[in-house]
Image (cartoon, rainbow, N blue to C red; front, side, top):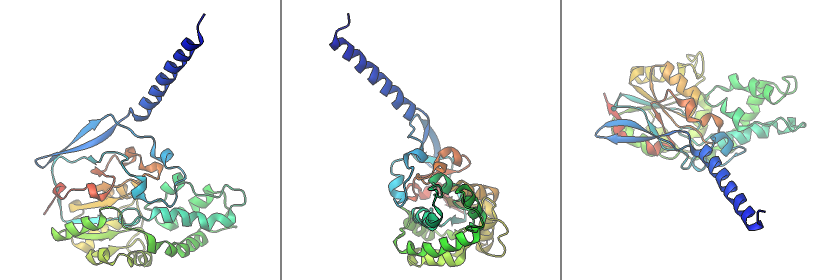
Length: 310
């Protein structure tokens, strides 16, 4: 006969063993740690893995990306020697500017009058599919996923209402951690720098009006609504147009991007890319950024000795 004390002990051991398995399953996959040694950046694989980012931040709205991505993972530096670079191109929303929290809230606020069923809500997973793309390309997709007929709310009207709502958020949108310092360092070292964004020029100007120091350092601003831009990201048009205006070859450019679509566009344009995944979105899974030359939590992690000026 098993005593009560013995039975409790058995249950306790079983519970600890089960918890241990669950913990191992949570952290037992792979992440990457960068090691720099005399100019050679070699990746060192470790066996640390956090919970799936999309699950960890499900439902997170206005919290800043800086808060959301704290200590998510080690940076991945995937180069063997410094890159030969002439220019650095920056996406704006989610890369230079902590934009997506306010954007997520505005996208949902506009949908609220059409949310009688309770289903017309933009999730972070859905939001992740539109980051880096032009509004004309994603608006119809979002309305369809939310079950809103074009007869009730057209894609064009949705975008119009969203763009009218967004300026309320601009004054409180901070720059991303490390953004201003990195641009200062690049300019001091003689690199050309540019904003290369899918946003319309007027929208870019409204956002950066609150960050004049950053805007003044940019050699050019390349918006997504220029007539020469035939296709938005993941096409390379925006990046190639920026390179032409800067007078540099695409292969001598480094792009900073927060979305897989931007990464695809940079690589399609034969450029290097530093990825900055947003931990609030399922697409922040490092596996979605496999082609990137760097995967960073923030621009604070980027070191100037990763590049050399041509």
